Length: 240
Image (cartoon, rainbow, N blue to C red):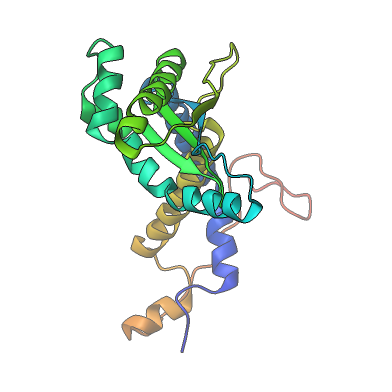
């Protein structure tokens, strides 16, 4: 069974349409750059850390270890509590109502390391200073509300979010988007090149006629150049 394109056909099409492919690749790259700088807003991420542990006066090592394991198992509860309306209401008040509870919940992400009582409060916003303020206020609100809800008496803020002068946006990623645009433009150019070849109504080889069941009556070879002044191979001019 004949294939639609042989390797020879593929290379011939790519060679013939290289200008199309390069043009679409450049177009895709330029489109990606325009999208990055005119349509996408940079988003920054700020992080604060909180440690939750109950005060334990028992010096017994086994008891202390059991207490630590119990605190670790409660970490998931603390994660839910941080994004609860009880805590977010305090954050909303400290932010003078600039954001609703739903908006704050979308901005805040709480993560923990495996087998750790340390929780990372990560906030994303288009303004790094606002993101840092929300992260710090969330940590303070959690520190204020948790003793009343969970009866935990030892909550420490290990690190506050502090935006630096050279803070880098977490999204969008210009290099990745540019590569996607370049690859997408190149792929589109290749697809169009093959579609043009498939939709072409010209007969290129004898087998094209065989597919239609039409016999070939004759073929015209490449004609010599008969322009005035053109020299023949034997040095004689075509003009008489």
